[in-house]
Amino acid sequence: MNARSELASPAKMNERQNRVTTVGLIMGSDSDWPTMKAAAEVLDEFGVSYEVGVVSAHRTPVKMIEYGRAAADRGLKVIIAGAGGAAALPGMVASVTPLPVIGVPVPLKHLDGMDSLLSIVQMPAGIPVATVSIGNARNAGLLAVRILGATDPELRARMVSFQENLEQMINEKDAKLQA
Ligand code: RP5
Image (cartoon, rainbow, N blue to C red):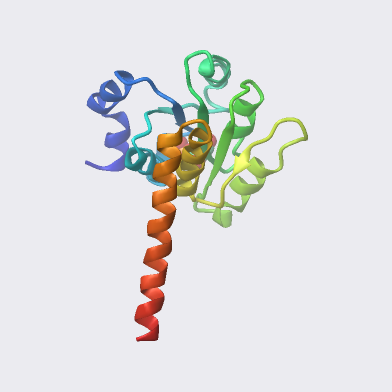
């Protein structure tokens, strides 16, 4: 199954809709999914429920505003928003929700994602977007887990264990280099 059909899969959507979702994982186009699916993989690893959708700031502006306005009342706790190019989605969604928004600059074929990065990171004072590095949807997923873990001891413990494993992995690599 390729990334696009995975995104559209009704079975996956139904499975997700049957759970109480805590993270909204949205993107400006289904072409962003190959980048954004790394966030979904992290949320799966940590057992965090999420929904996935395409919401475009420029192509579906009304849907975007409605999504952002309804998000908190629907029970979402964090929004991860990815977009490329003139990437208005994370900032615009942040402007209509009180929830934390994590922005993922998606690299396109021109400008190496610098355009996406600058579009997302240069927010005016008052409307924050926690922007991860270009294409780093995995870190967006991990940041969402940390935000949720601040009020969920079980999730926080899983994050601690993840960090311990990461440390051990790096130490093992170092030991191999030293050998
Ligand atoms: C942005 O335009 C999307 O987030 C995507 O990164 C980019 C290109 O979209 P497509 O033309 O591939 O649909 O809004």
